[in-house]
Image (cartoon, rainbow over all chains, first blue to last red; front, side):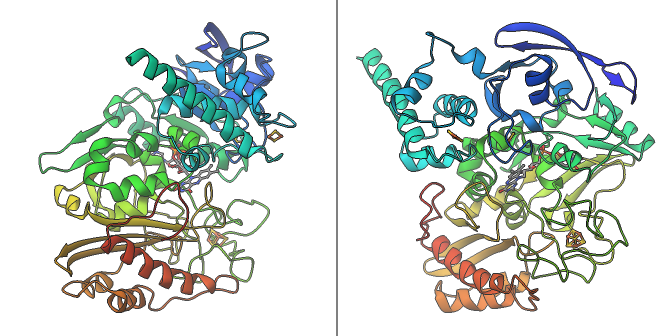
Length: 171
Length: 341
Ligand SMILES: Cc1cc2nc3c(=O)[nH]c(=O)nc-3n(C[C@H](O)[C@H](O)[C@H](O)COP(=O)(O)OP(=O)(O)OC[C@H]3O[C@@H](n4cnc5c(N)ncnc54)[C@H](O)[C@@H]3O)c2cc1C
Ligand code: SF4
Ligand code: FES
Ligand code: FES
């Protein structure tokens, strides 16, 4: 049982971040976003609004996309978090990262880590096929640069690649 | 955020006893509303009681009467994508998918959705007076900017609306809220769960000190509305925005005649807005615009708009007629194609 009184010792938790098991001690008012960016120096995940309104802070918690700014880190004890750093870097890119480059799906790039985490989850969830459906189910990620059509293009490319792979495998 | 202590509840009884012994304690589930409000210092709990490890609050199951029971911790996404719910209560599926975003729905829980606070700008801004946040301090919205506020059932102390989409469908489907507290368990009919502000706007609902929502149940017979339904949500942008007006409409048709009807409004009152008279006016009648307009007029009777939201009365009237038309035609509002047919 984890417990802390105001001003008392920090609470220890175990958390897996990008496949690596970490033990951290933290104050209960630390958000997951602040834990990632400040304490763990994983600054790929962005803070836009800090109020659940933009999606820049989207990460995967046990595979599900969630706004990390509204999660208390202490409540993530035992969970597995994937951030953009764990999705792909340098020459080892995820197909959706590659598609973002090919489709020019960003300008300033600030929303991009959240868009990619969200897009990867959207593809896994399997609820979107049409452009309208992709737009609706990506509506939790705001892009101030307005790269929306290209973001939809990139996601659609990966959805098509995926269905292609599935079709080949079935043949 | 204020400084607080954290307690991870191990059992439901443990959570209840913590809440009872510490009036400054608050429940946290998905956190998408509470953490947000704590950042604005609107909520300053002395202790957070984390419910998320309580297995007894999890899961969607079938009930003996052919209905469904949804645990308080079930994420909104799991409600939205449950195939049994989609078959029996597609109105609920549509309402949940009309709310928030995929990321928020993944975190947001059923119990948290019922208990989320209003989006009134003044409630969310501690620099302004608000009777809901600080009883007796006044209401910033009355005489202030009140475009998003209530037109029905408000009081001279508070004109806030309840922001949930899910709750509008649960009200229309006559759901039941199961709660557990220091005095044991009780069941509250959905229409008695939320309340009008009256002279106690600080109370959003009828939950008592120390009580916890355990589950929401839907009766088997509410599935008779699975053919003719719609959830029509009108807002300032097409996604990721709260309702200005929303309508949950559900009919049972016998030939061209209406055998049973349910009609609830969101975005217009301190609770999902229903009136038995409006539904009774539909029963036995031929489905058609004249009948629908009469029901709309009954449901909106006594509407009292404020300086900036008179538009909501007309918007609601037309939305009700459109929603009943969609329900009767079995053409529910599409969730991704935002054109209103
Ligand atoms: C940007 C944004 C947009 C949104 N848009 C919409 C929208 O369009 N439509 C819509 O319907 N909603 C919308 N929401 C609100 C969202 O649905 C709620 O925040 C969410 O449902 C709350 O659930 P939670 O589990 O995160 O609650 P929490 O934040 O954990 O708790 C909320 C409240 O409920 C209480 N509580 C939680 N669980 C229980 C329980 N079991 N028993 C008793 N009390 C409990 C808590 O004490 C707290 O007071 C939006 C939210 C955000 C941030
Ligand atoms: S409408 Fe209600 S919530 Fe908004 S400022 Fe007035 S009292 Fe507060
Ligand atoms: S930073 Fe979390 S949603 Fe904007
Ligand atoms: S690329 Fe600039 S905000 Fe999206």
